Image (cartoon, rainbow, N blue to C red; front, side, top):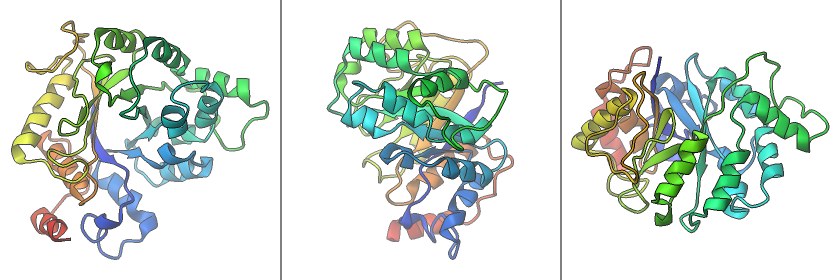
Length: 309
C-alpha cells in the first residue's frame, strides 16, 4: 500500500521553542514531540557533517513506530567535490550509521547547489554509483573499509531498499535527457517550491514522489495560504493515486504512471518563523492523515505568537 508522509525539514530551531514546542520542553525531547505531531522529518545535520552511529540509533529510539526519516546527503559530495571522485566519501556517508534508523530510513535527499549545471556524463556516473539497497551499500562500504565500523549498521536479515531523490537548482536540468536518466535509475526528481527562485518541475521519474515546500512567497520564511495548501493537497492526492495533476509542469510529456499509486514524501522547509510545523499539520489535516498523531489545539493563538516573535 502506498502512503503519504507529511513533515518538516529538521526539528531543532530556537524560534520554534514556546511556539510549536511547549514552553519548558527540554531540547533533547523536541524530536520526541515533533515525531508524535508529524509523520516524517528530514535530517539536516547529515548535510553539514557526517553524523554518529549512536545519534541515528537514538533518533530511532525516540520516535514512534511508523515514523520515517529522510537523510540529506553530505555536502562534501554535492557542493565541495561536486560529484567528482566521490566513491570513497559516498562509502563513508553510508557507513556513518544511517542504517541504525532501520525500517524508519526513508529516501536519501541529494540537494545540489544553484551553481551546479547539468552534465549528462557526470550524472550518469553519479546515479550508477548510488546503492539501491542495504546489501549494495554494504558492498560499497567494504570496498573502502577493511575493518567493520563499530555500530555503523545493525545486524539484519532484511535487505532494506534505499530510495534516492535529487533537488536541482540550475535551469540547465530542465531537459529530457536528465528526466530520462532519472527514470533509468529510478531516482525521484524533487518537486521544489521556492517562489520561482529555482526550477519548478513536476516530472514523475520514480515510483515515489518527493516534495519540498520552501515558502510560498519568501524563501524559508513565509507561510502557505489556505488556497496554496488546498492546491498542494490536490497535487499530493493525484501523485499518491499514481496519476499526475492536470496542469503538471513537465519537461517530458510522457509520464510513468502506475495504477497502484505512489508513496509521497512532502517536507515543509519554511522554518525561519516556525511556519513549517503548522503548515505541515494543516496539510496533514486536509489529507485526513492525522490518525495516531497528537491532536493540535489552539493553533490560531500559537500561530499569532509566531508572527509577533
